[in-house]
Image 1 (cartoon, rainbow, N blue to C red):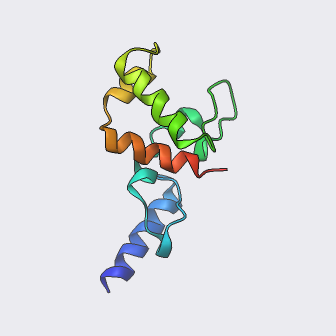
Image 2: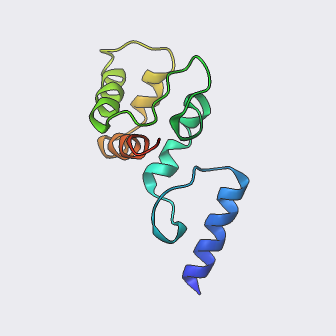
Amino acid sequence: MKTVNCLIGAAMILAAGLVPPTDTQAGELSRGAILSASCEGCHGTGGRSPGAIPAIAGKSLDYIVDMLQSYRSGERQATVMGRHANGYTEEEIRLIAEYFSKQR
């Protein structure tokens, strides 16, 4: 019953468009997918930007990790990205990078 309730809850969240879908089994949301939801506001659904903001879907895991770490350290300057990157732990950066690296 608990699994059914979790699946129903996850389906309701997905239907509301609050978090991106994932490719995990049984419709479970990965932590990386949940963390990536805030990125999608600018970088587009699944990291496929329709505009001037760079698309990040399908970029390599290492590239995304390096960019986020560069923004966080201040090595790479940005108005918004430095603030976002500062809010993530190393583990969260890796989870976000894994999520976007698998998007096509």
